[in-house]
Length: 224
Image (cartoon, rainbow, N blue to C red; front, side):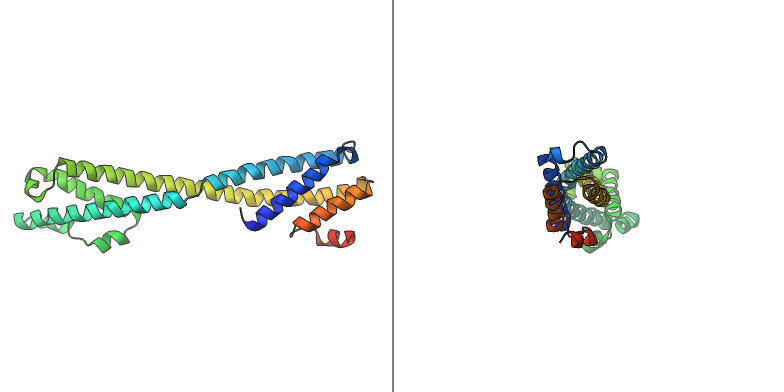
């Protein structure tokens, strides 16, 4: 959550704690009870959504995918150099052209194009495997490449999933806080209109003033 959202949640909790600590002042008033219940539901939803947002932090996934890609790039490029050497010696112009790329070229590729290029190198190794022994390309080399390709693709997919879930939680939090603000405005009116306990009312609006930087300015001024 943003700092402003965290502060707002603290205010919501303070308001709810005030209601829970003074039930005799409002439980007999059905419209106030309904407003408090609605706010409780929203607060519970905010806390659960904030937890989901926190759990879906992409930082670790981003570092893992970048590390995996770096290792795969190194292996792909080194393998391509060896296949290129074979293609030069064999006079295979088509294969030579396929393997003719730089490390910086790999660096500049988007992940999907990079994985496609990596698979092209694997396919070239498989197609010419019987002739690449002297170039230190073996079945183990191919298996290692394929495993790293699969691992890198999986890490990128996991990271994308985490980012999507975090964005979903972030968007939901924004809507929930907007909903909570509307519910508080309703409670402001209900408290002022129906509750006759002056101390309760004063404490309620004090909690609103202290914590809610987005609160009802006009209402706060009235209560000053």
